[in-house]
Image (cartoon, rainbow, N blue to C red; front, side, top):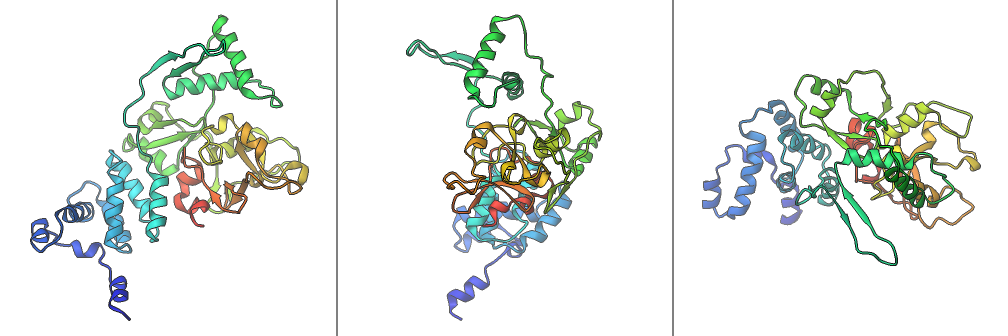
Length: 361
């Protein structure tokens, strides 16, 4: 074994920070910047904290990671201002030891960088171009979700949705009607442990996802006086429980469970919440695909049109497949890629990394 191989086999981990002292480290020749990073790791795993249980479990997991990766994790977690959310993400990052590239990919998926500044709530109008103008409305995400839901009601699926939505919008503003805030019925995806934590008053900073592509905090969830009137059952490998049907179109329960499994269209980067998606047959109905949950996924109108689900046609755009219970887009070369835009589907909330086949290729 060469000295370099021996070095790789004996990389220091978190244990070497027991009794850490920054001044001593700098005096011994450690770069001050690196000593500061070690100090941050030491404070997380050995410092005083009100998160004693999380610290204990985190320390057990951290012992499987080289110190350099623990430093990287804390650097990335600086982007999260809330301590409870930092511990939640930290525990997920410490779930399985991996290469730096895999760790970075996981961090990129779990940590969404906040916008530099909050967009100004306003309406802006562009100049006229060829007799047209653009109207841009920036408002609370829930208000916009209500409007979009209204504009998408009753659309002809055989025609492009945009012009139809414009017609409904113009009819709305020129008429005497309005869009009620209760017009939609988005589903809040919340794990039982999160539900109990919030009811105890301990989860105000928990972020929950809705099937319209928006989010709410634990405090807002509590204001809804949540009970457990409707429960969706999910298996860590198979996904939502299966309800079989011999008809082509999914029933209400199947649609709800499909929307809960994925809160947005699975194509990478797509922003459409599952409330506004079509329920897609992963294996086409025309090719013998059954109408059961193992073969259903919410896919937006556009991606449902270009999705490859018929072997008689060339696969040029990729398509949705089910991998370990989760519908995921798979490239023409067979490489799965998750949509990280709104990571609040039931499989992600309940099972985390274990339900992310796109990150294990």
